[in-house]
Amino acid sequence: MKRATALATGLLAYSSLLAFSCSAQAQTFRSSAGNLRVETVAGGLVHPWALAFLPDGRMLVTERPGRMRIATPDGKLSPALSGVPEVYASGQAGLLDVALDRDFSSNRTIYFCFNYESGGNAAIARARLADGEAPRLDDVNIIFRAQGPGGGNNHGCRIAQSSDGKLFASMGDHFGPRDKAQDLDADNGKIIRIAPDGAIPRDNPFVGRQGARGEIWSLGHRNPQGLTFHPITGKLWEQEHGPRGGDEVNVIEKGKNYGWPVIGYGIDYNGAKIHQSTHKAGMEQPLKYWVPSIAPSGMAFYTGNLFPAWKGNLFIGALKAELLVRLTVDGEKITGEERLLHNLGERIRDVRNGPDGALYLLTDNAAGRILKITPAR
Image 1 (cartoon, one colour):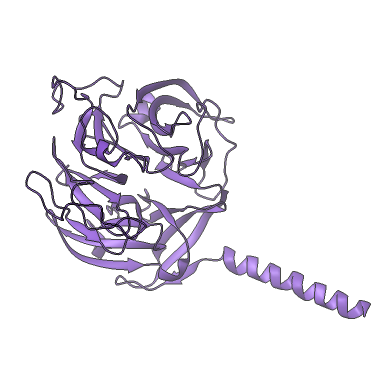
Image 2 (tube, one colour):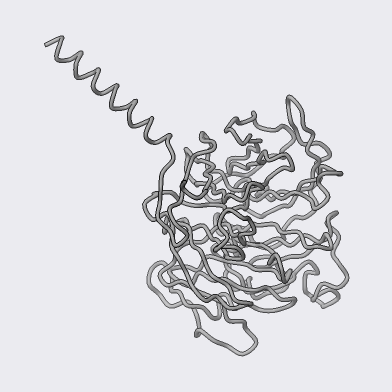
């Protein structure tokens, strides 16, 4: 009996070791560009939300509970950086996007978005990354606080910096006061534009209008979690969650209205109708929408050389659908879609170009990972 128990215990231990060994190895997936190798760069992250590459190839990573870390290319994680302000982390709220300033190499400046109070409103902070044995954030200043009714979910919040240094950030509708996405007196459901110090640029579209917030750049958004500039045209692209269906990809133009909740292609979670229709004069149509929803998060145009056939394609992570979407783009038209990593079984939170030409992903769960995608040799 003891021998049988010992044998069973040994087999269980061996099976566990084998399972761990297999899970640690790279996986191979099929694609239109040949087989893909997907390997884990780093694990042990709790709901990682955003990834930004430092000039030396290391990665700045945010975790939704309120931590920011540095990951090396060989998978070493730093302790949590000190200097991060107090973060309100509950449900979808927490520490969200992080972005390096265009002149980071000389000024060490970063920007990050987080929820700062129980109501769930978002704030954007500017800080200086002090590197060394114990990396930390210095000179932390909150440069923007969203105004309007808060809520537990649908916070956005992605940051993108334009060639002239202005910061664009996406604000969600907070999953409640839907109509506020159409009101210019609140930041709910808006893309905002501010200077690197938080000042409101004078050429913003609603500056000087009575009852309107000057930081607003566009309106009528639900929960935008993808924001990036086209590498050639310089135009701002955005993607956002619909409810049950109606996820969208848009090109964002100054002062335009993108329709939520007046028009759209989804329904409420209980099956009820939300929108007046799918079209309305004065409101923009998406370049692409998904029904049913894939729950998109993270977005990047591929600019590397490891996948020549994919150069200029748009990659979007999917949370609900647990896959990576590749979209072919012709100007401002989306001409095709390929769904990748079907069997990975991971919620893809962020997508980034690596300096080595690889694609990097973040998986959103309590044991989150940084994944690296390269051609399988």
